[in-house]
Structures are given as C-alpha cells and as structure tokens.
Length: 379
Ligand SMILES: Nc1ncnc2c1ncn2[C@@H]1O[C@H](COP(=O)(O)OP(=O)(O)OP(=O)(O)O)[C@@H](O)[C@H]1O
Ligand SMILES: [Mg+2]
Image (tube, rainbow, N blue to C red; front, side, top):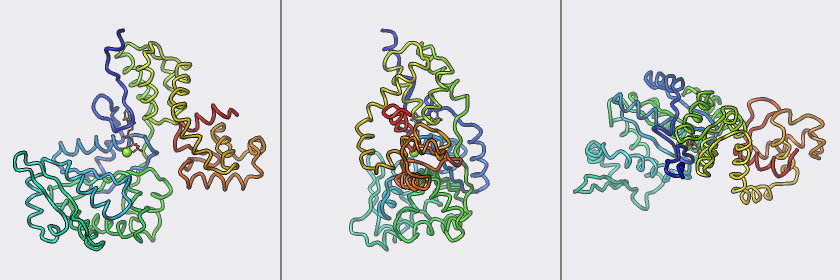
C-alpha cells in the first residue's frame, strides 16, 4: 500500500529537531536577547510542552554565534552526587571540547582527586567519572569547581539546566540553590537558562525574598503554539497524502490541552493506522485508542486515591471551569466546597492536577488521564 512506504512525519516522546520541530521565532527572539544581555532566564511551562526541544534549538543557534553551550538535565537527580554525575554527563556530550577540557582538568589538582578522566588514545574520546567513596564535602567542592571551570570553556558560555525545580526539592537545606546563585553572580561570562514545570515551586524560588534565587532571573511563561501549529500539522499530513481538516486538528489541540507531544502522538497513530482522511470523528477515535493503552495505569492511580478525591477528579474532567458551582458539587456527591478545595489541594500535591490559570479551573498534569476519566465516567 502506498502509505506504508512513507516515513511517519510525526514524532513524540523525546525532544524533536529538524523537520519534526516547528520553530518558535517570537519566543526565540526574546530568549536570545536576554541571554545576550547576560540576563538569566527561567522558562516555565507544563510537562511535554516542548521545553527541552526549544532549549536545544536555542543552544544550537547560540553555538553558531560562537558561544560555548552546555545542557544539564537534572530531572531525576536525588543527591549532590547525582547532580555532579549529570554535570559530567553533559561534558561527555561535548566531545569537541576534549582538548580544552583535558588541559583544564590537568591544571586543577583539587578536582583531579575527585573526578576521573579517561581519554581514548585512538579516538580522543573523553569520558568522566566520579571517584568512589567521595565524602559529601568533596562532592560539594567538586560541583563548585566544575561549574567555575565551565565558565572558562569559552569567551561566552551558556549553561542550560533543564527541570531546574529539582534543585529546590533536594533535601540539602538549600545548599545547591544558594551555591548556584552565588556562581551565577560570580561567573561573569556565563548566562544561565533554566526550565521547569512546577509552577508553585518555581514561583516561590523567584518571588520569595528569603530565597537565594529571589529576582535573580527573568521568568518567561512558555507559550502554547498558535494557529501555525495547525497549519504545520496539516502540511505534514499532506506530505504523506493524508487529507486533514483544520477543524479536526483544532479539536485535537483542545482535547489534549494544547500539549504538542500528544498532538504529535495522535497524528503519529493516525498515519501508522493508514488513515487517509482526518476529521473530528477520527480524532476522537484515535484518542480513545491511545487512552485505552494507559487504562491499567490510570485505574491503579485512581485506586490509590480517597473516594472524595476520585469524585473531585471526575468533576474536574467533565467541567473545564466553574468546578465550585453548587450544582456540580452536588452532582458529584461532594459534601461541600471546602471539602472539594482540600481534595483539589491534595491532588495538586500529588502532581495529578496543576495550578489552573483562573479561579475554578483546574488543569490535568496528564490531559490523557482527563480524557480517560471522561470516557469512563461521563458527566
Ligand atoms: N516546537 C515543536 N514542534 C513540534 N512538536 C513539538 C514541539 N515542541 C514539542 N513538540 C512535541 O512534544 C514532544 C515533547 O517535547 P519535549 O521533550 O521537548 O517537551 P518537554 O516540555 O521537555 O517535555 P518533558 O516535560 O517530558 O520534559 C516532542 O516529541 C514533540 O512531539
Ligand atoms: Mg524535557
């Protein structure tokens, strides 16, 4: 069949680049301007909105302009040692810095006691490791020395830290947060670009006068893609001979709360199934299929919650706004407004719901979970 010979024009799950990535020129321009003026930037956006893809794109452009750029991912970091490992891992990805890094390393005796460097004599590939049995104080020193050293890797340097709220969540009495802040001030040629998804944690880091990051970076809300995203999707379909209604894609974007990852995911499945025309009915069909694949996980999650919390979730899934309306509360058998409020608060703490943008609105961390709830428990 004809469609089977085409490569799928959609990708999801991992960061995207090249033809799979729709540029965000407006946002890029602002971020480049801040970084050029040495203003540190925090990008705040929901999960799976394209933050990492965007940062990679920014760094590619900055590298072309001659800056030395490094991306550190700290999503799963649970300790200082983990953080150090991720710093070194980021260095490993910069194989073209090999000679510079080796020279730096050889001139840093304090670090040589803590970090190992192996250079493959044939390929010149370098790989880094943390010496075993480092004392906690040594790990801290190694983190400081490594960050200072990064500032020496180029005349202008950009250090991007993805998922940076993790720094605030470490149980270290704020040591890493304070250390990073000090270094942001001291290393004059380096701009920091942070991203994060936990709104309340990041707002507190930047707006609470008693915290080290207080007003030390420009906060930018990561915007949703505009109507150009619908154009882009329909063109991608067109490229493999699939006719697609614009209205269907707009509907898909609404259903998944504007999450580009799930837009691409649904479209990927439509192409993989051999769909030739895409309309709203096909969109709802494919969403049901995708959501069904996660049913077990959703059921497990639901079973871990109290009954009131479960009802609050059904209510939220079926009402995109006005969740505190009297008739809604009664319909879902929730005793009172305050009971609902405390259930919602607990669900936010569990990171199942996110802060909504307006009173009486809640946003699901995973929009597919909301779709599953609506199908299982229609309002
Ligand atoms: N600009 C874009 N153009 C097209 N697709 C995009 C774009 N940004 C994100 N996506 C889609 O979203 C998916 C996830 O992107 P990415 O990993 O960059 O998001 P993220 O916000 O870093 O996610 P996470 O919260 O999981 O870290 C991509 O695989 C792609 O399908
Ligand atoms: Mg990411």
